[in-house]
Amino acid sequence: MNLLTIGINHQIAPLEIREKVALTPEVISDAMKDLRSYLNQDQENNPSEVAILSTCNRTEIYCAANDHHIHDQQIQEKTIDWLSAQRRMNKSELTPYIQTEISSAAVRHVFRVGCGLDSMVLGETQILGQMKQAVAQAQQAGSIGTYLNQLFNKTFAVAKEVRGTTEISTHAISMASAAVRLSHRVLGAIDQQRILFIGAGEMINLCAAHFSGKSPKQITIANRTFERGEELARMIRDQGHPCESIALSEVPQRLAQFDIVVSCTASSLPIIGLGMVNTALKNRRHQPMVMIDLAVPRDIEPEISKLRDVYLYTVDDLGKVVKEGMEYRTNAVKSAEEIINLQVKNFMHWLAQRSSVPFITSLKQRSEELQRVEIEKAKKRLNRGEDPADVMTELARGLANKFMHGSLHSLHHVDDDSVDDYQKMLTKIFMTESKRGGSC
Image 1 (cartoon, rainbow, N blue to C red):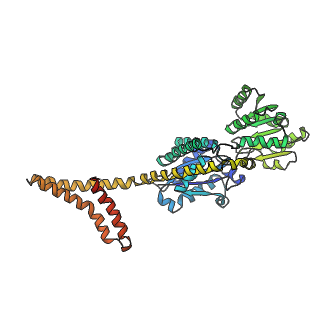
Image 2: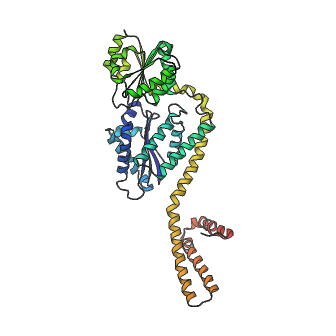
Image 3: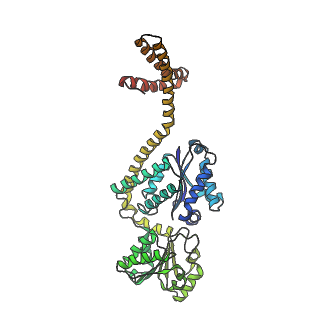
């Protein structure tokens, strides 16, 4: 078995591509089952394991696959074919943005993602929670097994070590704080603004916490599920800030009331359209609005950015802001990479050992077969009344000859350039064990 990562992320793909391949939580379990079934059509033994991570900045597929499939690039090609068909895209449109890593490079990539080193916000912790959720979904779907479970468990341990021993998260500017910063640059003091949050997930919770710390005039939560929106509104009110919850259907009628709109939902289609914003601007007498779209796919139609009185920012725009604290984290990144490099070696050692299990099992089975043959010979000689000491001596000689026969035969037929290396290997195997008095 070997490991692969195949995916698209913010480092290499624009938002327009990322939103096309994003998978919503509602479909991701079925997608993993479907992909695993598709990959394993021609694999009766050692079926591939699959997990999918889909966030606003990346959609990545993690595979543990049979070695010869990787060599033929069948897994990569079939996965890209599947993703293209799943998202109804031309393969040629998708391929330039695909990043594929294999073996130790794949392990290093997963570790870096889990530690927040590959995130738009360097050192952010949200990705680890998203990865844990992806693993839980894969386990529930039955699409992962020994290899990917071990990879992700190791990833979580490495992330814990990196955060506990480095300052990777220190001085980090989160997407939420970047949203506050951009809003302040455009509109001035936040305590003079009215804010609408659309959605009630983790990202909106983080944004609400950052904005409420600036004591805005009013906070409103609009969510598809009213009860969940009200739960977030109640938490904000308990902290002493004015906050109400409304139904998502009320947004078009009330949009003009808000100076700042922050949206992050799992909707596959835009929630706020050009006509809705045009109407709101007229009612506001063209007072400027800041609109922050943290969703992938986008919640706010991109054409709105062309309106003169609207300042629309996407996750990629916020990514430029979060880089401002990068110089403070250079040493922390170096320390984190050293930890990751060491743990990659440890994981690959485990993988190599795991891969050797079938070979070791076959050696033991062959050893037991040879033992049975010699023991049967010895029993027959003892039944004939031969001296037990002679029988034991012959038993030991017979086993030794059988165990060494294959190695000595190979030594006599190995090419001249490899004789020295082969002799050293045999010396290490047989001479080391004889000195220890060890056995198989």
